[in-house]
Amino acid sequence: MKFNIALIPGDGVGPEVVSQATKVLDAVAEAYDHIFLYKEAKLGSCAIETTGNPLPEETLAICNNADAILFGAVGNPKYDNDPTAKVRPEQGLLNLRKALGLYCNIRPVKAYDNLLSNSPLKREVIKNADFVIYRELTGGIYFGEKSLSQDGQTAFDSSSYSVQEIARVTHLAFQAAQKRKKKVTLVDKANVLETSRLWRKTVTEIAKEYKDIELEYLFVDNAAMKMILNPTHFDVILTENLFGDMISDVASSLSGSIGILSSSSIGINNGLFEPIHGAYSQAKGKDIANPLASILSAALLLKYVGLHEESEAVERAVQKSLALGITTQDIKRKTQKSTSTSKVGDFIADYILNQDDSNMNFRNIHMGQSTII
Ligand code: IPM
Ligand code: MG
Image (cartoon, rainbow, N blue to C red; front, side, top):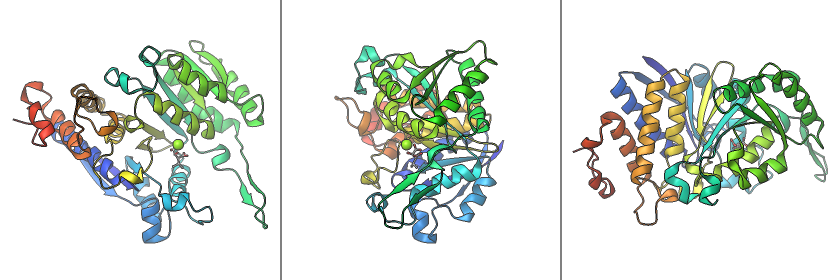
């Protein structure tokens, strides 16, 4: 089959990790006889530098015409340290989410057996943790009215949610729970915020349509604590935009490295797939960033366009790289040398093309040679 994929490498290590993901997609295309047509587009600080706009019109048009979007990272320390900057790289991603109506962000968090010793948590606490965060992505304080007073002494950001905005992501979270462990945890701050009380009311009402699902409520501060003390407690977490941003970074540290976590942002007509990690500008160009989050984002993209078997082949190849310790420095084992970003990508692409351990010359992998005899 033939698919149009919009590629947005973005800033920092984005281009390096996205090129590993396309290497892997090319291997899938060859092994399973598909055609992936890529159209590359700019977003973020690289787009500001060339066009003055973090989300150029052309990028939006390419995304609108694609079957799915593979995204790298956005951000540049130059802007982080300059509160007076009028345009920011992150606006590119936020505007793209809004323009494409990508209202549901899905972030799976899983303790891989081969990485348990990388987790900051005790083995027995993190073992078997497997949950997914459903984060509302186009509403709340991110997109509310905001302003700074003339004298620069006062600022405000407002948060609002409609029942319709809450309901559409809630249905997706409950449907996901039906295919998992049948529990939804609504994370909010209903003891303080009016928007959170509307979330509780709306979600409680919708839960009546899903009688097989247990619904529990947690305040966000308590949820962050519980995620560290008892991560196996969770199955599907449903939450608003800002709380989802915060708790997904908490969650991402549990599994040992943020460098392996991928996410999908699903909208009305499109899907965008990206690592949870940011631009990691210090590592740019060094060939050390972990490409697994981007490669696993490509696996999510394959599933989204209906290529389930192909998506599983990518996941298997990633598992194999973890089992063999063919990993970048962030998750290497004490006794092993780390592998570069591009060599991890080479291994995974080769494994997909061969899918047979007997063809792999593992001894050569760390020497930077081909993985195929
Ligand atoms: C994320 C990121 C973004 C967000 C930034 C880059 C705007 O942190 O996807 O979690 O806050 O949503
Ligand atoms: Mg974030």
